[in-house]
Length: 466
Ligand code: NAP
Image 1 (tube, rainbow, N blue to C red):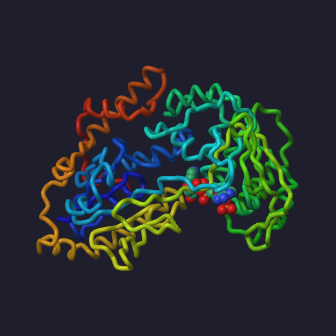
Image 2 (cartoon, helix red, strand yellow):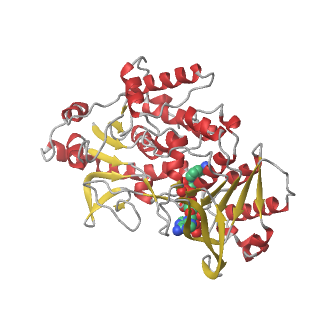
Image 3 (spheres, helix red, strand yellow):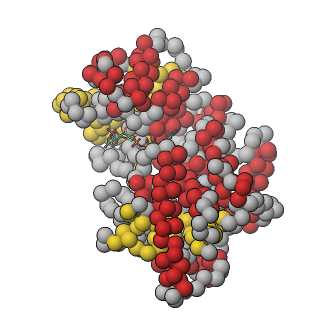
């Protein structure tokens, strides 16, 4: 029996657990640990509340976590303040780190930290009810917002800013966020790319969705499309970029519709400074860029300012080093070969990575499946050596790792605790005349988990999501 800990219960962690229990070469038991008392990682705390179809992936992840060979253990912090990586490895034959990319990339321009300037990840945490969210939800003083970056996260935050609160009532968005959005005075959202339309990182479905909001219209300047030679002839572009260009052209051709909010998609503008007004951000200064013919841009020496009382910097995530694990500062990832953690160039026995901490913050949720599978293939190839090392006494014999976690001072929240949180969220929503509404405070989450009202509901392997 191979005992494996998976650290992180987002898609890469759960897909790793799934790959481990879906094979029959090596009998396994898998504990999926998370520092939060709630599972599902970015599916719960990153996917926008109005993307209900993507959120429903939670059902597939749930089926894996309810498998009889898998155990969810929340409120287990790995690292300082919790259990050290070395101690964790003494409790299991193998540990797979699926900790994602926990922070945002910096812009590195003056004024970046002015009041009113936030990373998109902070905004996402706020509307997702993440218990660590720091944003204060102040939307009533802003009429114009600038979103820097043109990836899918930029599209998400732009859409949430431009969507009426009425359209979000049916989602699990927390009450405070719903109230702040209802009170929002933001009328113009400028989403700005430093390169051209043909190089935007968003996907076409997400882009088109911006054009389907009830009270917002998308504005694209045909002159900015004309600056990009690949917009005139997109035939040589990869499919997604070609379809993006087609969708942008269609937006540019739409006559003004006189809706309440405008989403202004801008290109070839590189942020150079956030400008203060009354001690807060008041505008963003951009340098106009020009295509260099090789997919990049050069500065033109001419500048443009866009007024904004709210700035959301959406320029990508970045991995955070975990105490005791090697880290590649350049890529923000853990060095590895086929998922085996490398220490000084050599695979470190029993230590593995999957997901964004392995390959960087790119790709859609499904990209994590083959990524997890590759790592699990490595674990299975190493399984007999790992078990031999244990039997030879090189690592201590295994009791129930839960005892070891408790001995380390942790009080893991088990599946029944999570089910109790789900019940508390359903009850909160019902009291507001809504469906389940997320709880966003640590104390309230733990109080709900401790109530343990739910009965365990474990199923066997055949019910696993494929
Ligand atoms: P992303 O796709 O890497 O986009 C980052 C954006 O920031 C790019 O437009 C990039 O421009 C820009 N940028 C980077 N540094 C900049 C700088 N210094 N100044 C100005 N602009 C800068 O990252 P993301 O949007 O955070 O998304 C992360 C991943 O999650 C992606 O794979 C995404 O598809 C996925 N995701 C998917 C969904 C969905 O499927 N609905 C939703 C959310 C996230 P350059 O291209 O010029 O570098």
